Amino acid sequence: MTIKKESHLAVMENDLRELVAGMQKTFPATGQVVLVGTTYSASDFTSKAQAYLKPFDDTRAARTAFTESVQARDATVEEVRAFIDNAHRFLGAYYGATSPKLADFGVKPKKSARPLTGAENAQKAAKARATRAKNGTLGKRQKQAAKTQPTPPAK
Figure 1 (tube, rainbow, N blue to C red):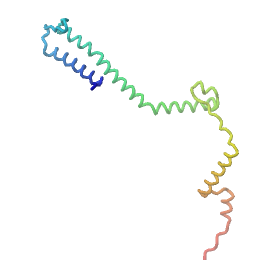
Figure 2 (cartoon, rainbow, N blue to C red):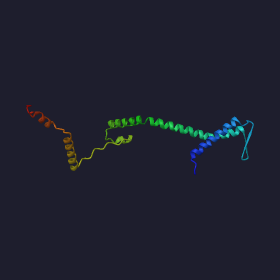
Figure 3 (cartoon, one colour):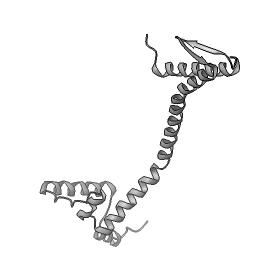
Figure 4 (cartoon, rainbow, N blue to C red):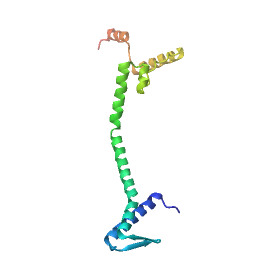
């Protein structure tokens, strides 16, 4: 069975805080603490425990600052994306969409479309005819012919 590092550190931090609180609340100010052959005055013992707590406090403050920074960054993502997109559009209009100078700004110049092959053109035309037939779309002359056809008289 292994103990998670975070929970182990949390227990250690809590123990240090309780030692400091106990020393300040209960232990006599003129008393001494002897640990493994080293004698500490009450104030030295408390100072040493507080010095051990400093990295815990610094870590907590850094984690809080990090979380706040991430939230601030995430709150501006849409605004930054719009700014970048607008800047890219401006640069494309200013220098031209195919200008190699765009690469200096990290923008890829637009490439012209490759010409379609004969088979691709035939497929494109067939697809357009199928779409027009499906939607019932008529051309200019077909509409004109439909309008000029006499309607049968009503009986």
